Image 1 (cartoon, one colour):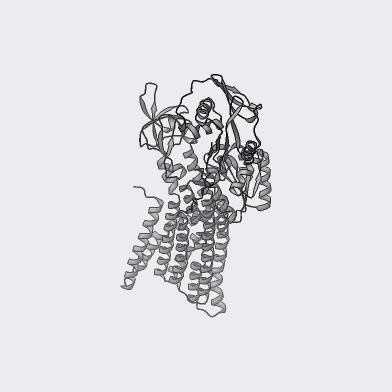
Image 2: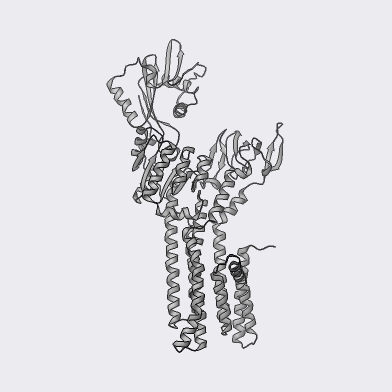
Length: 637
């Protein structure tokens, strides 16, 4: 059976420990060949790191800490400190195994995602018979059967029956989603309802699931700025240490009166304590853990650099429709002046003939309140105005106010309608002949969490901006409700890009959050572009971060995650650098021996790695129970 790298590292650590203990017992017992046992321990514990260090040096011309540890162990053996050499190798091997474990744990989301991808699917033919085929054979347009409890094999569209789908693997949201006919389905999610039929909309390599795996994999192989800087520093630092060791041996021996044995011993101790193992491990394990945490909670970072930069955020800009708002209008005000029951029945009968979003909003709001069926009426569409129908001798019209200019409204009514318009709402009128019977205010209302997220960023001292192509009145109404600092309305894609570039010049690190094709240029030009997962593919492709669930609180969580990462990496760097300085000074003044140097140095490395593992903890977001006016509906008669 082939062992994983993690298991090999653990096995090597255990063997090193066992031989070290046996060697110690034999040494105390006076057995002559005990050095051979210690050499065996050093071989098992140090073979992998030494081999990697030599190969890295030869292939990349890059010196690393692995070589320093190998030289220190050899040096300890040369001066007869066999046990110290074995102990150094054991603790170094232990820290390596722990780092391997950290890396694997941080990358487990990729492995679990890959395991969630079904290998086969049930292809339906015209006669209703199923054939089991591999997912890679599927073509766009194929009809599939997904049994109850099975994973959906590929991205597609639901064509028969409704069902409940567990999308937690994609969005990080544990609550199942109800799906109706024509709803999108994603490969890797689970069908919790009865068996369903679906058509394939994407090939296996282009599914959302495949894209997630690629993004997480790329992110975890793209180091942060801090990790890249430390990696570059490692090569130079190791060269300095290798130059300092001969000086540490010769200067005290020649000028300070130390014996050759003491000078050489102190040189070997310096070789151990000056190695930057803990410093090298300060950033990478923590960054990998943070990216893994984000993936588990439905946030994809396309590189550690974007996660790291998010902590320095100074300005954030949001698209309005579909980002700050739900993306579809809802009826916020419904005022019936007379004959509510009849008016509502005829209104819904007319709106059923339209696919306009405003008509769908009215249907959604009042569908359950109507019992009489007027579905057989003939409705005429008046382009640019609305619809009309004639029932008996009465003509009914629904649409804009200009639809029935003969109707004269009293001042009080005009003021009320004007108030709705000033709030950014679209007003729809229902006329019976020349008389206004009812009017409705519709608005694309903010998402429930939008106000809380805006408040969070403002409290953090970050400039908030809304950039939208919508009308100024509507934009101002939404901005006032959410408390956004700046508003830019009537913006074309190029206008959004110019504004984002100016923000980047002014603030340095800025974020653009959007979901549409028109947001793509702005996303690409921001320091960090954030795409909503339910948006367009092009927005997701050019963005640096993707919120797989259209939940803005995930953006708040990401900012908190980034700030925590910055704190932990800073702690690690200060701690590891401080320990190195302390150990070097203690060695120069002959206050520590080789075993204490080994414990201090390698112990600090282990503590740094364990501190980085804290990034795997989920960051909770407190949810407010406050209700905004936009989530309520006013209905008067």
